[in-house]
Image 1 (cartoon, rainbow over the protein chains, first blue to last red):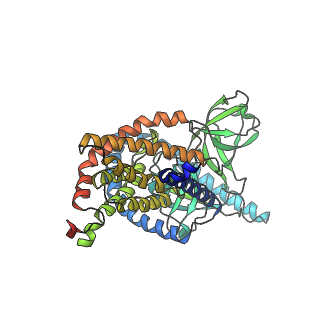
Image 2: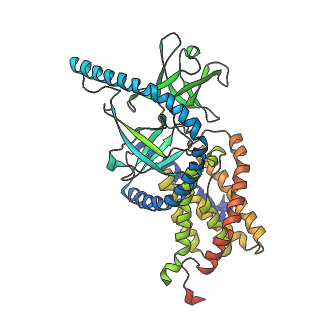
Image 3: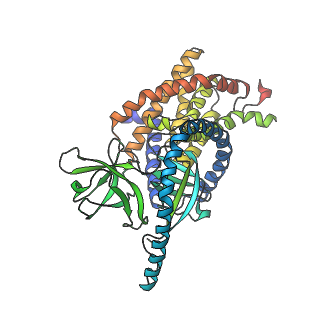
Length: 283
Length: 174
């Protein structure tokens, strides 16, 4: 022990290790518990975001150019598909309008104020993505100025892609739904089984990064292709946001319970534009 | 202008830090392969190898690490540790290594691999990831290939900046 304390290099390395581990533990806890980061961090992040927007521009232009070529090649197939969708869209829109009015009238008749399905939207652009592979964090250009709050659900490409984990003044950090972090708020979800019964559970991530519908009591009745929506339970996100579709049902690693794998509906790979969902009913 | 020259390396490294986030966003293939896009790390390593007696570079690494941790992760202790340690490691190694592209290129790849391992272990220890060690192993090769590519491409730039514009060194002393 005496030798250890006399060896300056070893002692310094040990002190650095302790400081780094302490810093990591404290900052992870603070990020989870605090609603907003410190003022210094917010100013710093805001400044970096301004530079990021400038640097982003040429990179975005190049990436868009490559995407445009790909789009042109797929135009004909996409056009045929969209024409088919367009015919059904007019009818769906009209029906949606009628249902919305009916819903509004019924709520008024019942003296209901806002329900779990009521929410407003804030659209933002992704300006950066965490350069490392294990964190699954996006930085978007909307912050507390736009009314964004911690834990709001974020959608892209028609489905939920994650949740806001940190809100700065002009930017926010979004943690993707595929994160394997332990201390993360999971989405409470529901789906209709083949027998018409509503099945509840939560979304978690398996060891290989696949989304799974877990803590389900009667998962065997969930057929492939069944849509999974947020249930609005747990006081974080509104009801009825699409998470994905049931891909397959297998057994977990112990072979005891069913593991319902979910194919995400949201664009997790390349989300350029995202929509933050502001639930109207308070938590 | 002379004052700006002293900060050229720092500005270039800061831009590289921002570019890391942009590249990761616009090249989704990197995420699919589990590749970390750390041009800043390559830059710091190469500048450290070239400018081995400049201890200010370690402080620069620390500041860049703090910025990266705050902006990308919201937690401290990942890049705050990786960046200054990469500079320190590179400066220590440069005393024994011959001044040749191949040795420096190899050093970059080794430091990148060590940083990848530390990054995974730190995330695993604090519960920010639960993926198995086997998945990390499978992502190592793509990471090394990416590091080899990045360091080979950016080698002349970092070498030029470190030689022409040494960080916080007054030109009058030369």
